[in-house]
Length: 469
Image (cartoon, rainbow, N blue to C red):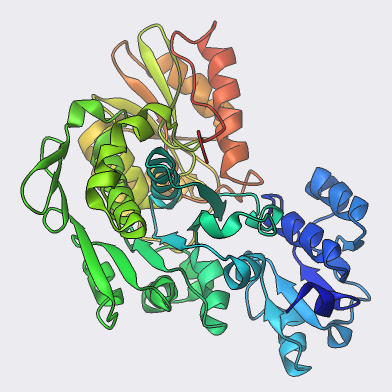
């Protein structure tokens, strides 16, 4: 739809959200001349600045519910990814023949340069930000967007955008609607597929298929070959497949080195400023995706050193908050699955006190239990699933205490942790029982650690921004 054709169009934005995508869509639609109504179950106090900025952009707001919202009179219903596609207003729109859209669909339909889409159960944000950093270091301007926050609609009308690469983190929720519209990136990355969001998707097969939708229009796919679910998802993909893992086009060796398909070392482990094998796998994916965009693997690998020197991990992902009395305090609040907590436990060197628990998404905790058995001297559990998790740990002979809240967990961890150990917040569950989102949970943990562990950090936490992206 051209700018002229948006003039006077009635658009309802269902779910403003707090990560910037909804607000970016509101601003862009208003610039095109559309009439925009925003409705959200959250009230103004919860939405904060996002609501105020949407109103300043000229949108009408119906907050704290959807009273009086008539979707049948709209020309487009723009659905926030957090809103299920079986929600009442979505069903009403479909029954009335009102088209469905999303912020990320608006970006995909209008981005004039190449697009890279990154999905997976774990590692999406790290892989997307690393891909962005490698491309920028190689001299190809890249913009980071999607599920990681913000909106590329803010830059989509700039005159040189056709020369930029959009690197988009894509959740399964985003991909559901993109698949309906036949949209997808030029280069797709699937980092892994393990059970997640079963409370929304219902079955693992449905969740896997939602992830596989990232391949809809891709010409090249970067795939984690060690994961059978990824291999299943890509089975019918007929474009170019680039594999990474224990074998393939980019190998992560036991010592952490990255090696290419010819057996040549791309980068040594000691030059990679990240903990754990999981992060090295994310880097391998980023190199392959960058090479696919550049059509030049040598150029991508030569840019690695510069990219890593400028790059900082997205916040709340194995971020060192500080070190006090010989104990490292690590914020991995982004971990919302048992598998991601297991990987984070494997990445932390030495024994630790683990803080875990939160809102259950219908996931099997066995991988978290396995990781805790290998690395955690004691587990402190929090949130609504804390009691059940503590019971499961104790049943396996592991040391565990249910403490309920993050405040009590940090106090108890400060008393229990020994010099040389780490206190690791890696919950393995969603934050939505006690916090607005994982970022709020991570910020609270960092604040508590700094206050209760005592004094200033010997080594400070990571930045909340991603260099060059």
